[in-house]
Image 1: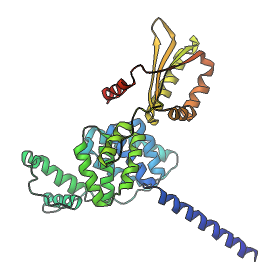
Image 2: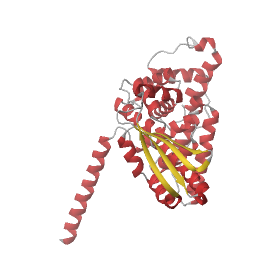
Image 3: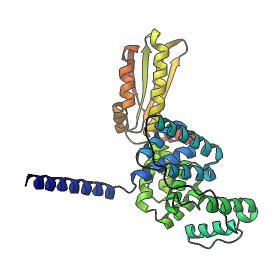
Image 4: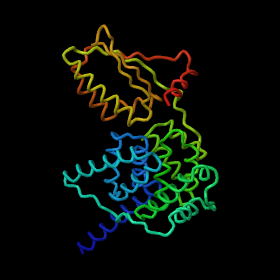
Length: 350
């Protein structure tokens, strides 16, 4: 009887856990695989190897197969160029080597097809593009295809034939990778809009595209996320909010700790700017006549952004590590004389 009761309680616990997980999944448009793959594609596209390394680890931890990530990185050469694709592949190899050294064995996944022997690769690629666009693809493609036939051939025969023939990633996953990469890069709005339509044809939903904007904002920044928001018909989020914080931090450092402090500060400010989208500026400077006097120009998109920043793990580590190094600290809250001119600063930084 006791065993029966225990079994009954165990069954209820498992059922409740499964229901909770299902509810959680229903509440999220993008699952962990999609979120991490999007971040990997975006960071590859902008060439940020430092941020790509933890993103790759996170993707593997979420269950992405090695060959899935490889296929995404290889495909991206067609959109962000060989240098960034090869750099990302090199970073991925080093991440895998490091994980193996720690005893982590990640799943390899489906084998990658490397041999595509068909009579007419152009026709193969043209048919794939027709499936993606749901429109007839003329031969040669009008416009650029007629002006630069070799580019049209490479597009059809290599990208949509040789690369897309591998089923390690399906068409929906491949378009998701492409959209994520294009959303991260400035100056490719026409291609982004075209692939958003292709992505929808493969089953990518409006809710997933909406959630993708948040992934892009976290990985790359609000400016690029707003480009994606505009492309999918969503309102842009202002970079500058009404409660934006601007201040100058004046810090005097104990001379014997100066070099050590500057190294820690440089690392902390860099990390903050990279992983906190609403930390707009932490710009350290020193007085030339008195190098132990430092001034930091700090800009936070909102009061909430500042509160989250000072609670972050990297800031707390910086604060506790440098406590004995700081002789004095003055935080000077600033107000803009011409708030309407502030957006011009960010336009010039694009």
